[in-house]
Image (cartoon, rainbow, N blue to C red; front, side, top):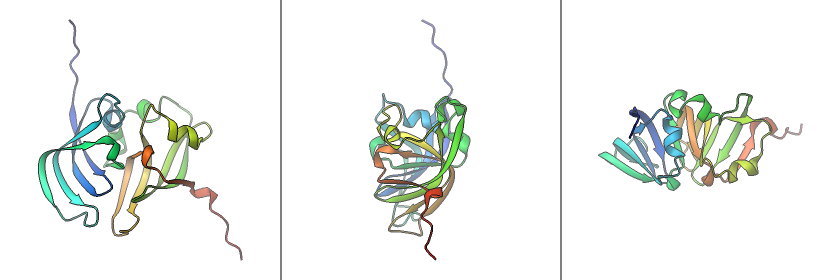
Length: 180
Protein backbone atom coordinates (compact mmCIF):
# COMPACT_ATOMS: atom_id res chain seq x y z
CA UNK A 1 0.00 0.00 0.00
CA UNK A 2 1.34 3.40 -0.98
CA UNK A 3 1.15 6.02 1.76
CA UNK A 4 2.33 9.55 1.35
CA UNK A 5 4.19 11.09 4.27
CA UNK A 6 2.49 14.07 5.82
CA UNK A 7 4.44 16.99 7.07
CA UNK A 8 3.27 18.32 10.39
CA UNK A 9 4.45 21.46 12.09
CA UNK A 10 3.54 23.50 15.13
CA UNK A 11 1.97 26.94 14.82
CA UNK A 12 1.49 29.33 17.74
CA UNK A 13 -2.09 30.28 18.58
CA UNK A 14 -4.24 31.94 21.23
CA UNK A 15 -7.45 30.01 21.74
CA UNK A 16 -10.39 31.59 23.57
CA UNK A 17 -13.29 29.77 25.18
CA UNK A 18 -16.04 31.53 27.16
CA UNK A 19 -13.95 31.21 30.33
CA UNK A 20 -10.31 30.66 29.37
CA UNK A 21 -7.43 31.80 27.23
CA UNK A 22 -5.10 29.02 26.12
CA UNK A 23 -1.79 30.02 24.54
CA UNK A 24 0.28 27.32 22.91
CA UNK A 25 1.06 25.49 19.69
CA UNK A 26 -1.31 23.59 17.42
CA UNK A 27 0.07 20.74 15.29
CA UNK A 28 -1.11 21.33 11.72
CA UNK A 29 -0.67 19.77 8.31
CA UNK A 30 -0.34 21.72 5.06
CA UNK A 31 -3.94 22.97 5.54
CA UNK A 32 -2.97 25.16 8.48
CA UNK A 33 -5.07 25.93 11.54
CA UNK A 34 -8.23 26.29 9.46
CA UNK A 35 -7.81 22.72 8.25
CA UNK A 36 -7.59 21.43 11.82
CA UNK A 37 -10.49 23.51 13.14
CA UNK A 38 -12.83 22.60 10.27
CA UNK A 39 -11.94 18.89 10.22
CA UNK A 40 -15.33 17.23 10.77
CA UNK A 41 -13.75 13.90 11.72
CA UNK A 42 -12.40 15.31 15.01
CA UNK A 43 -14.42 17.10 17.66
CA UNK A 44 -11.42 18.01 19.79
CA UNK A 45 -8.33 20.18 19.54
CA UNK A 46 -4.97 19.55 21.16
CA UNK A 47 -2.79 22.48 22.17
CA UNK A 48 0.83 21.64 23.00
CA UNK A 49 3.04 23.51 25.48
CA UNK A 50 -0.15 25.21 26.62
CA UNK A 51 -0.42 28.03 29.11
CA UNK A 52 -3.81 28.53 30.67
CA UNK A 53 -5.30 31.81 31.94
CA UNK A 54 -8.78 32.83 32.99
CA UNK A 55 -10.54 35.37 30.78
CA UNK A 56 -10.92 37.94 33.56
CA UNK A 57 -7.13 37.87 34.14
CA UNK A 58 -5.72 36.98 30.68
CA UNK A 59 -2.08 37.70 31.52
CA UNK A 60 -2.00 35.80 34.84
CA UNK A 61 -0.88 32.22 34.29
CA UNK A 62 -3.12 29.67 36.00
CA UNK A 63 -1.24 26.56 34.89
CA UNK A 64 1.08 25.14 32.24
CA UNK A 65 0.51 21.77 30.54
CA UNK A 66 2.29 19.68 27.93
CA UNK A 67 -1.08 19.21 26.18
CA UNK A 68 -4.51 20.72 26.75
CA UNK A 69 -7.43 19.11 24.95
CA UNK A 70 -10.41 21.28 24.06
CA UNK A 71 -13.83 20.48 22.64
CA UNK A 72 -13.97 22.42 19.35
CA UNK A 73 -17.63 23.34 19.77
CA UNK A 74 -16.67 25.28 22.92
CA UNK A 75 -13.90 27.25 21.20
CA UNK A 76 -15.08 30.78 20.38
CA UNK A 77 -12.01 32.27 18.65
CA UNK A 78 -8.54 31.19 17.54
CA UNK A 79 -6.06 34.06 17.03
CA UNK A 80 -2.88 33.66 15.01
CA UNK A 81 0.33 35.66 14.88
CA UNK A 82 0.38 35.63 11.06
CA UNK A 83 -2.35 35.58 8.46
CA UNK A 84 -0.58 32.70 6.67
CA UNK A 85 -0.97 30.46 9.74
CA UNK A 86 -4.68 30.11 9.00
CA UNK A 87 -3.84 28.01 5.94
CA UNK A 88 -3.34 28.17 2.18
CA UNK A 89 -5.28 30.85 0.32
CA UNK A 90 -7.46 28.30 -1.49
CA UNK A 91 -8.68 26.84 1.79
CA UNK A 92 -9.07 30.15 3.63
CA UNK A 93 -10.99 31.76 0.77
CA UNK A 94 -12.93 28.62 -0.01
CA UNK A 95 -11.47 28.36 -3.50
CA UNK A 96 -12.87 31.65 -4.76
CA UNK A 97 -10.69 34.23 -6.48
CA UNK A 98 -12.99 37.28 -6.53
CA UNK A 99 -13.21 38.31 -2.92
CA UNK A 100 -14.58 41.45 -1.31
CA UNK A 101 -13.32 42.50 2.12
CA UNK A 102 -16.08 43.87 4.33
CA UNK A 103 -15.35 45.59 7.65
CA UNK A 104 -17.61 44.04 10.29
CA UNK A 105 -18.27 43.89 14.00
CA UNK A 106 -19.57 40.67 15.41
CA UNK A 107 -20.41 39.64 18.93
CA UNK A 108 -20.64 36.42 20.86
CA UNK A 109 -21.88 36.08 24.42
CA UNK A 110 -18.37 36.92 25.72
CA UNK A 111 -16.44 38.74 22.97
CA UNK A 112 -16.74 41.51 20.39
CA UNK A 113 -14.63 41.16 17.27
CA UNK A 114 -13.98 43.87 14.71
CA UNK A 115 -12.16 43.14 11.48
CA UNK A 116 -12.39 42.34 7.79
CA UNK A 117 -14.57 39.48 6.60
CA UNK A 118 -13.81 38.17 3.11
CA UNK A 119 -16.91 37.45 1.05
CA UNK A 120 -17.18 35.77 -2.35
CA UNK A 121 -19.95 37.49 -4.27
CA UNK A 122 -22.88 38.90 -2.36
CA UNK A 123 -22.92 38.52 1.44
CA UNK A 124 -25.57 36.14 2.76
CA UNK A 125 -25.78 35.97 6.55
CA UNK A 126 -28.15 32.98 6.57
CA UNK A 127 -25.82 31.00 4.30
CA UNK A 128 -22.82 31.88 6.50
CA UNK A 129 -24.40 30.77 9.78
CA UNK A 130 -25.94 27.62 8.35
CA UNK A 131 -22.90 26.47 6.29
CA UNK A 132 -22.11 23.00 7.64
CA UNK A 133 -18.88 22.70 5.63
CA UNK A 134 -16.95 24.96 8.00
CA UNK A 135 -17.73 26.02 11.53
CA UNK A 136 -14.70 28.28 11.83
CA UNK A 137 -14.68 31.30 9.54
CA UNK A 138 -11.61 33.48 8.92
CA UNK A 139 -11.46 37.20 9.66
CA UNK A 140 -8.48 39.46 9.07
CA UNK A 141 -6.85 42.48 10.71
CA UNK A 142 -9.06 41.86 13.72
CA UNK A 143 -9.40 43.14 17.24
CA UNK A 144 -10.95 40.93 19.90
CA UNK A 145 -12.33 42.52 23.08
CA UNK A 146 -14.07 40.89 26.02
CA UNK A 147 -17.46 42.57 26.49
CA UNK A 148 -17.33 42.76 30.29
CA UNK A 149 -13.54 43.09 30.51
CA UNK A 150 -12.42 45.87 28.16
CA UNK A 151 -8.76 45.53 29.19
CA UNK A 152 -8.74 42.17 27.38
CA UNK A 153 -7.90 43.43 23.91
CA UNK A 154 -6.13 41.26 21.33
CA UNK A 155 -5.08 42.41 17.86
CA UNK A 156 -4.47 39.66 15.33
CA UNK A 157 -3.76 39.65 11.59
CA UNK A 158 -5.82 36.46 11.22
CA UNK A 159 -8.45 34.79 13.38
CA UNK A 160 -11.01 32.04 13.09
CA UNK A 161 -14.35 32.56 14.82
CA UNK A 162 -16.89 29.88 15.57
CA UNK A 163 -19.99 30.66 13.50
CA UNK A 164 -22.16 28.77 15.99
CA UNK A 165 -21.24 31.26 18.73
CA UNK A 166 -22.29 34.42 16.82
CA UNK A 167 -24.98 36.55 18.46
CA UNK A 168 -24.77 39.56 16.14
CA UNK A 169 -23.02 40.76 12.98
CA UNK A 170 -23.03 44.31 11.63
CA UNK A 171 -21.22 45.98 8.74
CA UNK A 172 -19.20 49.00 9.84
CA UNK A 173 -20.11 50.89 6.66
CA UNK A 174 -23.81 50.61 7.59
CA UNK A 175 -23.54 52.66 10.77
CA UNK A 176 -26.45 55.04 11.16
CA UNK A 177 -25.66 58.68 10.47
CA UNK A 178 -26.02 60.90 13.52
CA UNK A 179 -28.72 63.56 13.44
CA UNK A 180 -27.36 67.09 13.68
